[in-house]
Image (cartoon, rainbow, N blue to C red):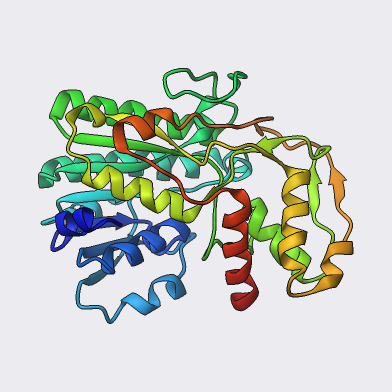
Length: 331
């Protein structure tokens, strides 16, 4: 965070929904380091108490255990709040395919509750976690914000509906919004456990345990893997930007680099081999392609560079180096 950003945010009141989760807890930590008053709302559906434990004694931190599906809880959380960073959601394409109703309840009804609560509380700006899944079956690369395809999963539908609702609340009620379309975020505090763990922490845990990770398909599918510190930078820029032309729109939040799953596995083995040389010899296994998966994902970040001044510092290799160090100490 620059000194100008620190000066602007110091003493502000920011609500982080899903603040005990992977991305949310990292945002809470960053904001607290710069004098922001942080309210964290989480129901621990996917977030963890341990992620916010270090903040509970901080004088500028307040935790509310509650669910965004309850409008009154959302209204309580938004009281005296200037900015909302809305990270609360049920992620995972497979989870949404297995249980579309719950994904919709949290990601659509819960999102609408938060918009209503923010509007009624007079919140200045509502910044929310959008998703690269919104690009759906649109095949062109790189992905540019104003061209999307047909959604390929219930999760993708929910995240697209979020963008539609945010646009309506901007035009109808004057609530300034910014959507950040996250592309495969990874880094410290991302949970490797559970049926719907993201690929990087899952692979890391398996390699450390000397297990062979499974790749869905032949490994040629590619993603724009995005280190958490790049995502933090985008959220801070979205909080601080004063240019009205930068508001009420969506931005790709990525590095702008494509990595196949096979390349990812090789990079992880390289970084983990610093700690355990035998990991370099662990074989990869393959299984069928997964329903709802987009074959390739690569972001154009020109819009974010132009309107927000986005300048991501971590590519896949340098981000993995940081993440692997954290996992080795904490798993």
